[in-house]
Image 1: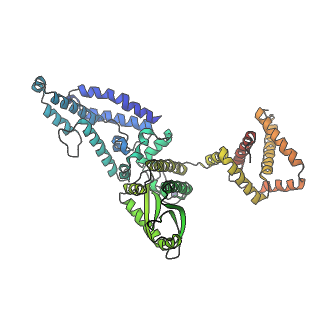
Image 2 (image 1 turned 90 degrees about the vertical axis):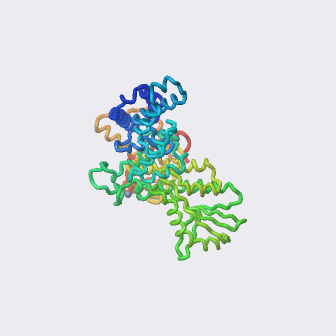
Image 3 (image 1 turned 135 degrees about the vertical axis):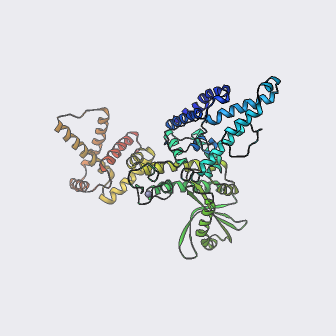
Length: 496
Ligand SMILES: [Zn+2]
């Protein structure tokens, strides 16, 4: 677990380095020596978490509450520890110490050695200085053109950054992926050194950037719609708790130019004769003015529909708000204020944040790795979704072959077994007789008994059609999975 290793480093190994720094005389701590320690630490941390070597250093040193990793930096710590000791000794006011050491001078020297770009007085405690240095590091990170793109929103809703320390239900690989997403180092093709051929998207013809993958590429469209709809439902459900409002979702409306549009959430306050259109949108974070831009964009789309909605709901005054949510589970200040106006609870805001994070990660892995087969397997083998798959199969078979699904499976398995037997006899082998196989045979026998009363000619037609057409891209694998899950479900007695 990479996060546990990082915690062990922070809690047990760094403190061991701190003690020598406290004892060593300042002149013996050479800058080169300290920077070498830092290089070692940085490469070890990157290796442990398994993040690319071009991850910005500023991100490693930024505070955890701003999605940095809060890694120990020897170049700061050597002087901060010394400064701390000097301040303590000054406070004690011992005449012997005052006679042997020039403490104000040493403090001044320490502060000079620290890369401080902000106003700082000598009375700053080492704790305050460390905090300021880490925040400065975040500032430096946000100045990076690509790797610091849009990270300014990490400071708007700090609660949404807690997954860095707590993992918040993410698996280790998801956690690593989320850290890569944090600093825009997901291996998309436009990132230098990630591809040998073109920078075009592997799924369409656009430039493959992280904003493209998370927000535009058609390949992840269904996952994106799902992400958006859940956020919409969470907001609507939370507002619906208040009896004074009427809340509707996905309301169709007609614009003044005659085109049709669909408003995500409509809130109606009959007492005040007011209606509000709320349109949540998930965007990749780019710049600080983005929330206002999104709001204006939505106002242009939905304000022409207000007249139509007014007539439909008998409400005179309408306002439109576009709510921007960051694709990396950030929530801009403007959106938070808007959500607070409708008394949306912190728990709901938390749920929205973690839902966005947990659904953006699959969009990335779905884009980068071919998961079609895994998806099929997942859909078919989950007991809850089995019924849906079964009816879906039945529908397709009815439409394409005019054939009941049981017959289809029976036909498939007899053929499958015949092929296997032929193969075995060719190789001079005999199939093993396991208990499981016996169970399968029993089921087949039952079906064969049913089958006996059917018309043989009908069966012949089905067999012929079966050979001609299979409605799936990988019929063999998909059907094997379906067959086995079918048998399992028969044994559990859950077949519809
Ligand atoms: Zn694409």
